[in-house]
Image (cartoon, rainbow, N blue to C red; front, side):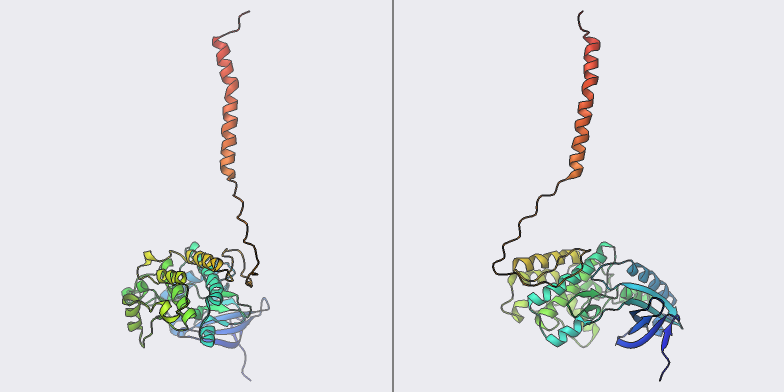
Length: 342
């Protein structure tokens, strides 16, 4: 029996959960806090690059400050035996890419709750000034009760420093899901993450990617130059409104898309409410919950009461007190120049 492997004499690696081009993810045990965690161990050739180590440290620190129910929490990071590693929240379940492969297609009622959760997590990061850079279904973990958490914030951005002298040739993210500006080598922005969410949305609804090729170079050209097949060509009974939303999200020009994932999430939430489809509250604080379809006899929710602008009320009271306070002063001035006749 092989001896268990440890990192920093604290994390016991139990079993591999998945393997990618840059890292292996393990289910592990935190011996200090006695809990299960997920540990991502990066390849040695990445770990040995000094520029990458520093950028990795900076990005890990920034990602560790993200606290949201739709973001995988980062607990720790470090270097042991020449290998960089990340320690993250352990999320039971599978990734969204696996679910897509298993199911083939999602109905809008099935896809929207997951997409809205993804928008909530990524939108929270956008408000914190962070861009994911590598939004793809492999980085979205789905629990058995259909809660979605986004993982791997900052790693793609850190990888861009491995060849700093070839910045124009750097491709951020994964070829199937990156935005046209990423395909051109430009630094990604929040709207780039929105485009990637649109590719995921297209794949969930149709069961296939809008662009397919055998090389990253060809994929890059397709993202920059070609328009994807219309959603209505793939799904004749799709809602025209949903098709318009997706067309906007997949615009080649970033300024023509929704600017942040929050904006896209609100649009999808409103669309779901209009169709009386299951939807999730898009608030950064509220954890996602399972939603059931409303009853056919359900009454529409009453309009929320208008909020009171207490700041304006306070300013008005201050002004009123100030005016009333001047009355004795003007009365004194009057009697100084108009003394009463005795």
